[in-house]
Length: 89
Image (cartoon, rainbow, N blue to C red):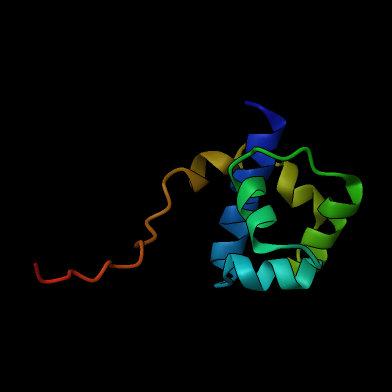
């Protein structure tokens, strides 16, 4: 699996386990929420500094983001998406 995907899936798994929003993690890292989103989707080449900032914001080890066994569990997350409001036509 692409290391960017591994990092992104682990970032999402750890963030959700901590009960934090992308916005809260972004604030803790000093980056924009959209940057966190693109990292979670595996679209960013993260630097060592970004890896460190993520570990500090989420209170985990930097190595936790590179664990290739954990992303498989992240794919099976049973997280409910926010419900959309229906508009009357």
